[in-house]
Length: 163
Image 1 (spheres, rainbow, N blue to C red):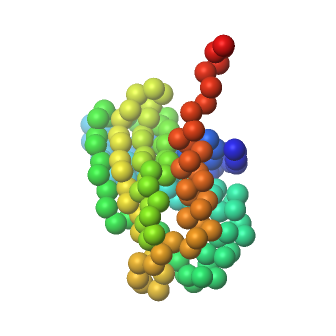
Image 2 (image 1 turned 90 degrees about the vertical axis):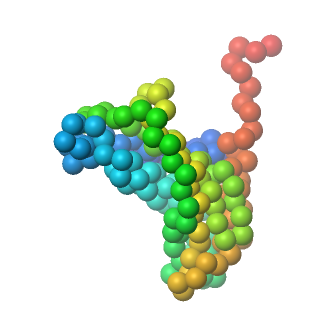
């Protein structure tokens, strides 16, 4: 189990990434409710920092991916999103990102925007791996790290006080 904490980049561990975001005036509409497009920015930060911390934990792996596919990037290809409850100015939100499905040239991430125990927004985001302007297979070391992260999340942990 890998834990990599940074107050700016969030926390990576137990198969998921958590990122705190405070809602500012600029994130809201005229009524003080978070504007729907702001959630897309919050989730982008979560995805970016998930990949950043995955790379920090696996620096050699990212260097190998760069050698195999120079100038690689991840681009959003498809997103299903549900807006369940509103957030307001000054709320502290937690963006939770976990790998859901890892394929040859794409990964699907499950993202949640939480306020405490309340689910505000939920999305399934398919991100394609692109190099040289074209979709390419995700280099094996990177795919393995994402799958390992996915498997870590699916392992049930024993209940405290059991037995």
